[in-house]
Amino acid sequence: MSEEKAAGGDLGGGGGTSKIVLIASVVNMVATIGVVAVLMLSNQREKSQPTVDDIVKGQAKGGHGGEGGHGDAKAEHGGGEHGGGEHGGGEHGGGGKPEEAVTDAGKINALDPFTVNLTTGIGTTPRYVRMNVSVELEQGVPDKEFDIKLPRVRDTIINLLNSKKALELNSVEGREQLKEEIKKSINVFMMQSKVKGIYFTNFAISN
Image 1 (cartoon, rainbow, N blue to C red):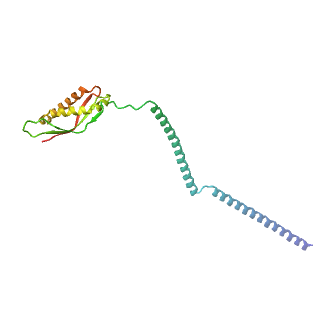
Image 2 (image 1 turned 90 degrees about the vertical axis):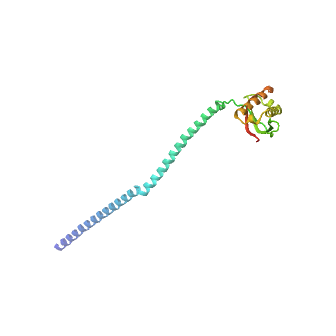
Image 3 (image 1 turned 90 degrees about the horizontal axis):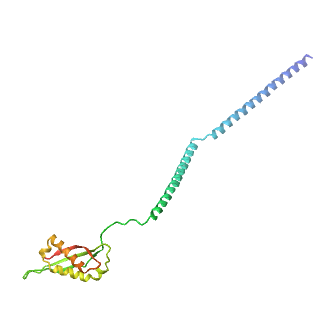
């Protein structure tokens, strides 16, 4: 009887040890699972947090997009201004023709060159003058009459030169007087194509 109790006590002690081992195993398992869960959560958090490369890439993309958006805004703004400029230009264009410069100059007719003998004394070397003449008509007058009477214009100039001496034309005053005489002589027979001015573009007297 005592032996059976002893055996029962041994069995009871063995059962208590098994329970302790089982509880320890469960605790170890739970702890292991908890550690694994913590590690997995930490790993997921690390993955969810942006890395340095991700931050750099994100800034690059953001900067690019910002510049693009800014450029689009500029383009839209510029387009508006351009459209306004065109609209303003249209209004300006519809205002009328550009103003022309006011001038009192008339049409200038360049005549063919002249080579004319001058008056010389008996026994002296013949002298002649070579000159280019341009005739300016009064502003607004028709030049058709001048073109028709051009031979008479040239004849008038030649006759005036024939009557001059080289000494008279060597001075500035003499040439200015010749211009005035040519102008008055031509206007005598011009009805519409009145002469405003005479210009010498080349003037040379032989020695």
